[in-house]
Image 1 (cartoon, helix red, strand yellow):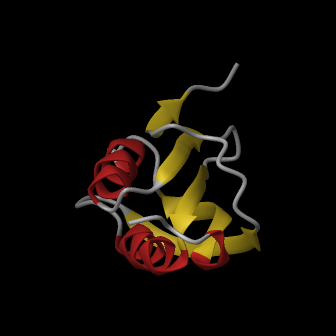
Image 2 (cartoon, rainbow, N blue to C red):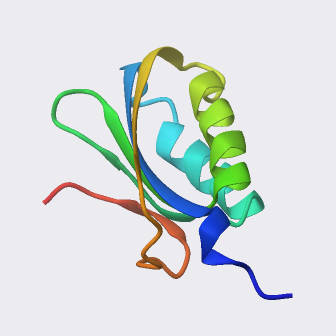
Length: 99
């Protein structure tokens, strides 16, 4: 079955709160892969985690809901979401490290 690009999207989420040092990026990676969402998660020097994701809009909404919950030990203060168009940039979901 071919996926139509009309129901595909991208999003960038800046997650703030207690999200570093609690396995948040690994949590995001595990959930994204289970939902067939591609992209990456990365710690920022501000203490936030940046999540960039592409996939079916329905899967991205489910992913966002899980990002708002976070892993055990995390405290999510805010998730700032920016939506965009699907570009097919990523083959899978991974963790990136600041340079």
